[in-house]
Image 1 (cartoon, rainbow, N blue to C red):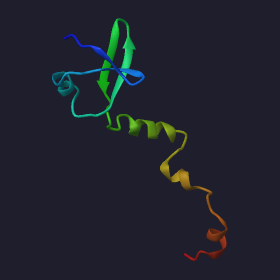
Image 2 (image 1 turned 60 degrees about the horizontal axis):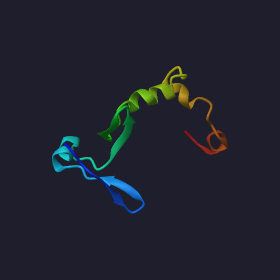
Image 3 (image 1 turned 45 degrees about the vertical axis):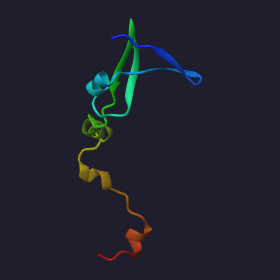
Image 4 (image 1 turned 45 degrees about the horizontal axis):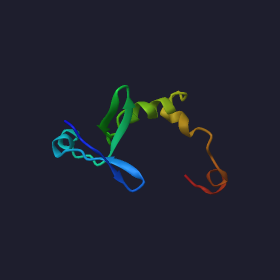
Length: 83
């Protein structure tokens, strides 16, 4: 499919036909990558792919989740708090 690059203010733009927009899905944001021979446009995936693994890696130096709260007492805990 042929398309024209047009002037938009100080920039240039490309009109993407509706058929191709439908193929991208309903997302309003895309990434554009310069690849050999052209541009690659893909929708930005808004899901949290990999977030659980990233969180696990961020806390991987801990023995267990219980170790996260060891020795974090403050003066209130030591003197004023009654159990």
